[in-house]
Image 1 (tube, rainbow, N blue to C red):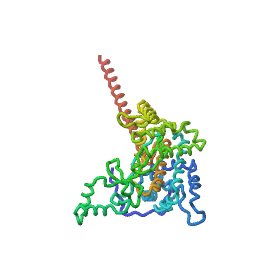
Image 2: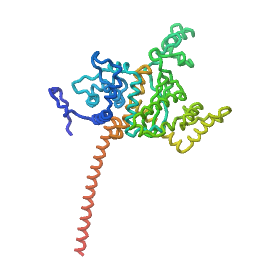
Image 3: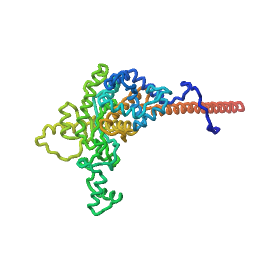
Image 4: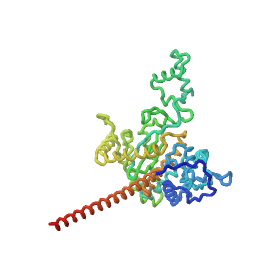
Length: 459
C-alpha cells in the first residue's frame, strides 16, 4: 500500500450536495430514534406541555421544547457530562443536526439557552416527559411493573470540601482551621500546618455543622471509591422484567436507605398510575403492579418490612446478620421479618437478588459512568433532578432502540456494524479456505486414482 500525502493547501467547494456528505452509524441510530418519537407525537406533546410557561407574541421565539429535550437525550446517548459539551457536540455533529431539526446553515443553541429554558420549566414538566416515555415503553411491551428493584448510588456534586462554611456563623473552613492553629500555638500557620492540623482532627466535617454556601443540598459522604466528597444520592426503581427505570429519586447523600425507599416507591406507584391512564399502555402492564420489591440489606428494617406488608407488597430484602433478636411487643414486625426471611431463602428469592445485582448495577453504569453524569456540573437539587429525569429517560429509550436496531447507543450501533462486517469477512475467508481444501482433496483423490490405474495396467 502506498503512503498517502496530506494536501498542504485546499480550496473549499462552493456548493456541496448534502447527499454526498459522509454518513456514520450515528445517522442510522438517530433517524430510527427520531422515527420513534415522531410516531408517538413527541413534539406536539412537548409543545402543549410547555406552552403555559411562554408568552405568545412577545420576544423572539425560543428553541422548540422538543429540541430542548432532544439535546438532553443526546447528552445520554453521547456520554456528555455538561450542557456546554452538549451544545459543542451538537454544533459539530452532522448526525445530531437532523435529529434536532437543524440544517447545515442554521446555528445551534448555546449552553446559556439551555440554562434559561431549564430555569423556566419546572420539575413537574420534566417529570411529565419522563412518564410520557414510560408510556411509550409500555406500548412497546417493555414495561410490566410487577417486580421492582430499588437501589441507590452517589453522584459527585459540583462543590469542593475546601469551600465549606459553618452553618451557624458562616465562617469559611480555612478561617476555622486558622483559629484552631492559633489556639494550639501557631501564630502564622502555613498551608502545610493547616493540612496537618486538619488531618489530625476527628469528626471534622459533620453535615450538621458544615454546608456549601452555593449548594447546600450537597452533603459530605463517603464515595464508592472510599473518597470523602460532597455528593447527592440518586435512587432508582427498576422493573426487573424489562430493565426499565420506573422512577428516579434525588435525595441527600447522608440520608439512610430505609428513609428514602418510601419516597421512591411512592413515585414509582404514581408513575405507573399515570402510565395506566392510557388504555393501550394499561393493557401491556401487569394486572398486579408493584406486587414484589427487591432490595439489598441496606434497606432492611422493621418499619420498611411492616409498611411493605401493610401495602400488600411481597418483600425480598436481604437481611444483615444481627444475631438473635427479641420480639417482645413487636408481633407485627416479627411476622413481616420472618416472612421476608422465608422468601429470600427460597430459590426464587435468591434468583431475584442475583437479577437485582445485575440489572440495577448495569443501569447505574449506563446512566452515570458511560452516560456521563457521575460527576455533576449543576448545583441545586431542582436543577440536577431536571436533567437527571431526561437523562434516565434516554436510558429507557435505549431499550426501545435495542429492540429495533440491536444496540442502545450510537457507539453500540457502530460496534455492531463492525462485528457484522468482521463476521462476514470471516465467513468469506472460511468459504474460500474450504474451497481451497476441497480442490486439494479432489486433486489428491484424482492422483491416487491415476496411480492405482497405472499399477493395475502394469500388473
